[in-house]
Length: 63
Image (cartoon, rainbow, N blue to C red):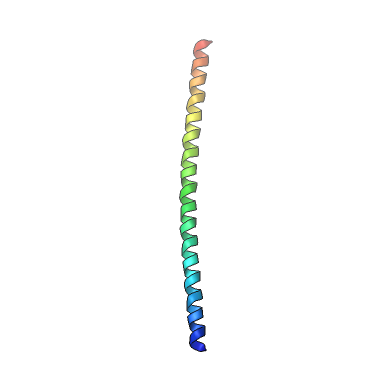
């Protein structure tokens, strides 16, 4: 009976280990996606600033 219990406990430990590993992998992927989103947002902000500057230059030239 004790050996059966130990086998069950070993399976539980492996299951918990596997789930924790998958959770860590998913968390790392989330961090990667957050970094990508931040980079895209920064790039978009730069493009918006450039467009505003260009609009200002065109307006100044027209006035």
